[in-house]
Amino acid sequence: MRYPASQTAERREKILEEASRLFRGKGIAGASIAQVMKASGLTHGAFYAHFDSKDALACASLEHAMDQLALRLRDTVSSSDTPKQAFLDRYLSQGHRDHPEAGCAMPALAIDVAREPGMRRSFTGRVAGMIESFSASLPWRRDRSREDQAIGFMSAIVGAMVLARAVDDQPLSDRILQATRDELLAGEQAGAAAVQALDNIPDISRPVAPKISSELDNIGLKKRVPAKKAAVQREVGTQLSFALYGAANRMIRLHKPLLEPLGLTFPQYLVMLELFTDAPRTVGDLGAALGMDTGTITPLLKRLEVSGMVTRARDKSDERRVLIALTDAGEGLREELWAVTDKIKTACQLTEDGLEALRGTLKAFARPAGE
Image (cartoon, rainbow, N blue to C red; front, side):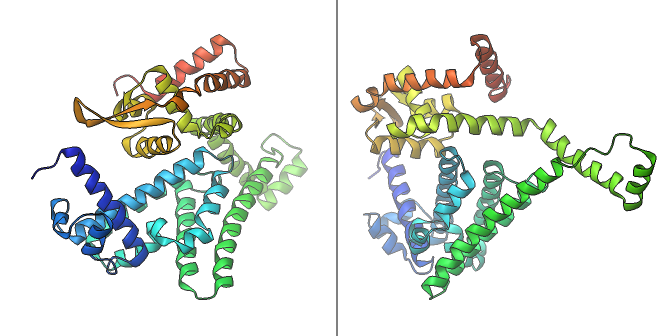
């Protein structure tokens, strides 16, 4: 008997979720196909309709678990004024340590992956993706490579979690997590202080009195310091990325105190505004309108559904499509959310012409012609 494509996809997703949970909790060798299928509410024989082997399932479930971590990173960054601290508080927590089945796949499965050559390519791709996400999403010192700092950061938190789970001394385990968190945040503060100190060095590249100039030449300061300072200034002053990143963070911070009483995050707020404009909408349509891929918008919509703001239902004319509609509770937020947009407009302190020009520039940048 052939099942509808939508039902097959849902069953495969369920198998992935349970396999990911069991593999992280028990290790790949510690969880059998039979256990995974039982947890999924399916028979053992149904497994091969979705996966060719346990190795294929292990690779897919590993990718699934690491994609979930990437989504949690985005959620944490978008909803916090101090994203690095917020992420560390969540990652290096006792709850994460005590429940590996619900946590990050890297500390839970890295040793298993090292012994399974067939999984290393999938793992490597996801690790590279996480480095990129950390590099782009979290604040870093400006005097060092963002990617190198992201690699060190990720290595520290994963290593700390492996050690905290391995030791049988509870106070030591707690201390490993706390010390790693404190050290990473202290390093960030020290880096910021160093850059600030560098910015405060007087500019001695201008002409100076001969005697002073000679003394500076003798100690090499005249040549070295301006070059270092100029490098930092050049990066900060000319990089469009910094301006856009700062503006995006400020916009999220402006929204946070207005949205928290309503139980919404900033990305959820954007979805709600789109639905106020036109609903029901397909997941694909919403994602395209907001510039979110399916992996980003789907869990976001699921959380809105759980909170009672939207419904998700298969389109009767095409079961491959999922339609998103507002509930009465979601519709009841219409006036309050539009009021938020007015308050943000006021906070921006721009004229109507200035707002329109800025909006046009950002839209053109986000969706350039020809792409």
